Length: 264
Ligand SMILES: Nc1ncnc2c1ncn2[C@@H]1O[C@H](COP(=O)(O)OP(=O)(O)OP(=O)(O)O)[C@@H](O)[C@H]1O
Image 1 (cartoon, rainbow, N blue to C red):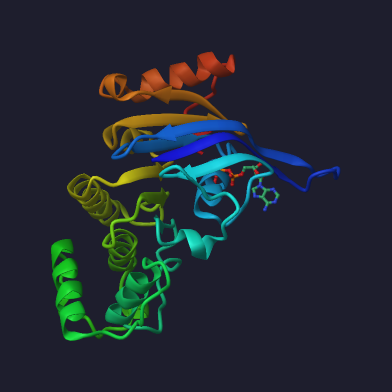
Image 2: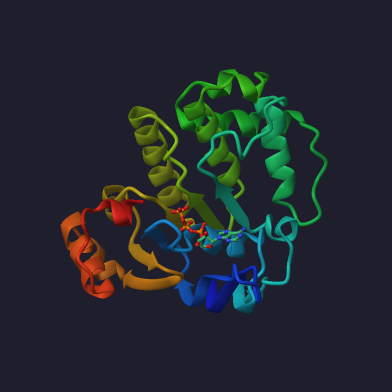
């Protein structure tokens, strides 16, 4: 489903500020894989997400979605295959537009040539049903301006907008990190149910190791621009936070003062 081959990304190449953000990364996701991604600050997690979504292009290597090379395509051309939710609840939605208008925009973006964003009766019914599935009453607020929603409500809407058109790849970029614990739990639960119901191929960055262990069928750990650990489905259920920290320590060959180095 997703093949990242030998991808390297440099910032400020050829200058004294040159930074290797990703170094010859290889990552293959099978259809339906739900991979959690952990790693220290600056490990390259966001850069990886940006290269998949098309915000950035790699200096070397290829990115393929369902066998199609996409590394040369701009973000808007990839949006028909990719859904993404960001850390900032304000990032994925338009605050001055209504819930319904935001959904219509997301719906049109997922179509190859973009459809009209007009809302017909049948589309409105579909949107209401989708909102109802979130279970937080947004189905009764189709005409509310999104800027008036709470952070948790807005993130739930972002999650819905990123998934209701069945993207080939779902990218979750620390999407619960900015929420209070109860809202974070709500979004985590919604994520689990949407991903498993729709069998979405998902990559989720998190600084929460417990969450990284609990969710998904695979876990990767990144450090200094490389994937240093890739835990396959058959080993994932046996993971513990302590075990992962030990593994990180062993691979890096240095003693960690505490788990914040990994947690960020
Ligand atoms: N636009 C940029 N210009 C220069 N350097 C950058 C840029 N974006 C990222 N970097 C550098 O590339 C490296 C990888 O950054 P990236 O944001 O991908 O890490 P991350 O794992 O997402 O970190 P964090 O957990 O702190 O968000 C870091 O050293 C970062 O400073």
